Amino acid sequence: MARGGFPGMGNMNNLMKQAKKMQEQMMKMQEELEEKTVEASAGGGVVTVIANGKKEIIEITIDPAVVDPDDIEMLQDLIMAAANEALRKAEEMVQSEMSKITGGMGIPGMF
Image (cartoon, rainbow, N blue to C red; front, side, top):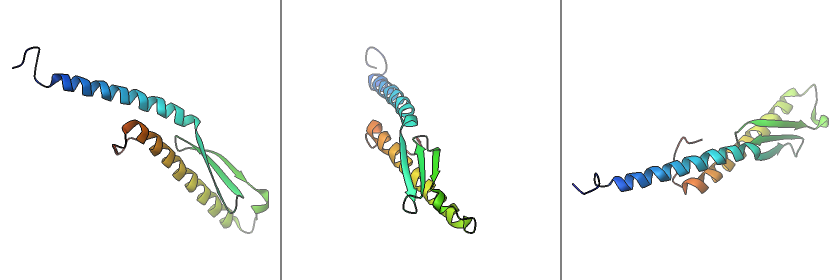
């Protein structure tokens, strides 16, 4: 056995330090993402949805001209399309920020 402990323990300590640093960076990134937003629209901009980095919808804007009581289905479809696009953009934003920290390691299930 090598003097000063078990062989390879220095590598383990370095790995633990790197993991702790990455965890701190990820926590900071999550806080920053809560403040960042993405916007998506549907129907040529008559419905706009804003989502944040926590993948929460924080605002929906509907042009009154598109509100037709006889065609609620169209309005529902426009809202759903804009919301899904905003959430997709939020996911892309999170993944982009995440890859800056992980170096593209692709750790599944992190967010």
